[in-house]
Structures are given as C-alpha cells and as structure tokens.
Length: 68
Image 1 (cartoon, rainbow, N blue to C red):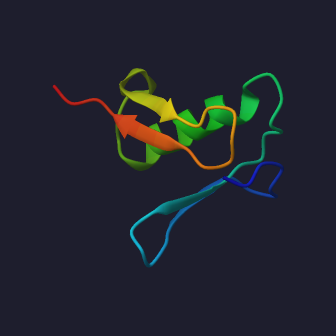
Image 2: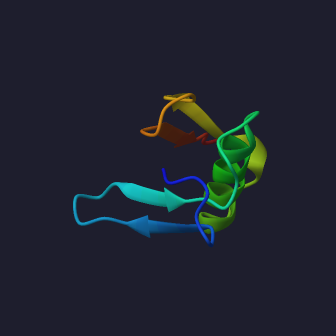
C-alpha cells in the first residue's frame, strides 16, 4: 500500500498480488477506509463485504471479500 499518492488505483503485479496507491494519508484510518472503498469498487462488491483481515496498521495487508 502506498499512501499519499497522486491518484488512487489498484494494480495487479506479476506474482498475483495487488498494489494499492491511495490519495488518503495513513492517519485515523483514512487510508484503510479508502482501500476498502477502492477494492469494493474494483470488484463490484459493497463495502460491507470487504475487510482488512491482517495488517491494518502496516503497509502489507490481507484484504478479503466475503462470499454468500
């Protein structure tokens, strides 16, 4: 995750992981909230289905999308 980027975007890397660039600063959960919104929008899911399972306070995160 790269906070304080010029634009918010998700990019899939060659190893299958995703790199998130976020405009929001990493303060008061703003970057995490933006990450959840970005992932939800990218995969066509409501934000309520997206969660940060691990790494909420670090740069490397495990984000999951809940199924039915």
